[in-house]
Length: 161
Image 1: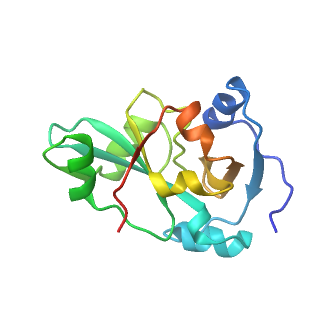
Image 2: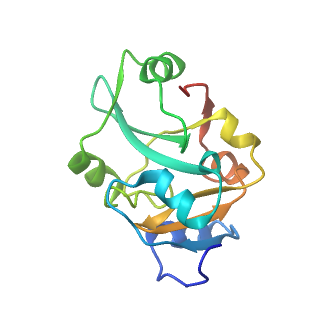
C-alpha cells in the first residue's frame, strides 16, 4: 500500500485544497520512463485506475490536456474528431513543461500554469476512485473522478485505444 508520507505543497495540491477537494496522498519511488505501469505496481493498484495527464496540441499548436487510463493509449484521430480539430499530437517535453509548469513525469491537470481545455476519457468517470499525478514525480493523489468534470470542467470524450 502507499506510504503515508506527506509531500510538500504543489500547485496541484494547492488547487485541490482551494476547490475543497479531499484527497489521499500516495508516494512511491519514481523511475524514469516507468509511467503508470511502475506507479501502479509500486502502489499495488490496478493500472486502469491510475490516470495519466497528457499535454497535447492541435494543428494550430494550441495546447490541451487529455486524461487517460494508465493501461490505455490515446487515439489522436478519435480525439481530434471528438474535439473538432484537424489533428492532435503530443507536445514535446519542453513545450509541455512550458504550458503546464510541471516536469514531465510529474504533470498534474490541477494548478496548470495557464488555462487549457481538458478532456477525459469517459470511462475514467465510471471508476469509484482514481489516482492521478499530484504535481511532482513519484506522487499521486487519490480523488473521486467526479472532481475532473465538476471542479476541473474536463469534457468527456471517447478516444481510448
